[in-house]
Amino acid sequence: MDDWVALLRGVNVGGITIRSADLAAEFTALGFDRVRTVLASGNVTFAATGERADLKATIESALRRRFGYEAWIILALRSEVVAAVTAFPFDADDPARQPWVIFCSDDTVMRLLLEAGPGLDPAVDPVAPGPGVVYWNPVKGTTGETPFAKLIARSRFRATTTNRNLRTLRKILA
Image (cartoon, rainbow, N blue to C red):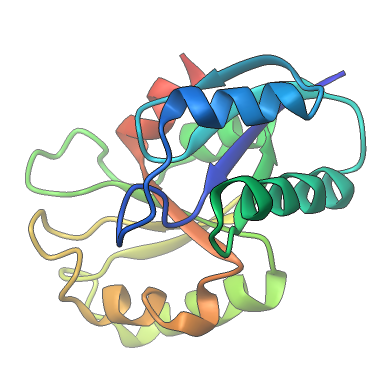
C-alpha cells in the first residue's frame, strides 16, 4: 500500500465548497485507508494500492459525481511531496515572500511554465525547476498580479496544475 497526497484544484474558492468531513467520507467510501484532510483547501492524504492514473481517474470521477463540479486533482506519492518540499530552492523563511510549489501532472505544461522563467524579472517572479514541480517565490501580496501569476492562472493549465504554499505542504506532511 502506498501513501498518497491528493491536491484538489479550485476547492473552497470560486463557489465550489466542500466540507472536509464530506471529502474524507468520499475518500473512505472509495476504499482508501488512513484518510486525512488537511486544512479546508482540498488536501487529502490516504493509503491505497493501484496505479496513479487509475486512482486519479477514480477520485476525479467520484468528486464530480458527489460534489457536482469539474474536479481535477494532482495525485502525488507522499515521498514525492517530501522531495518537493525538501528541495525548495529559495529562502522559505523570508517574511517578504510567498513560497509556492506548483504541481504539474503534465510534463509539457511544466516545461511551458519553466520556459517562461528566463523572461521574467527574478526580483518579481523567481521561478525554478524542482522534482516534478515548479517553484515560485513572489513578494507577498503580488501573487495575483505578476506576469508568472497571470501565466499560471490561464484556463489551459487548470486541469494539470495546482499550487500550494510551502507552509501548507509542511502541514500536509506533518
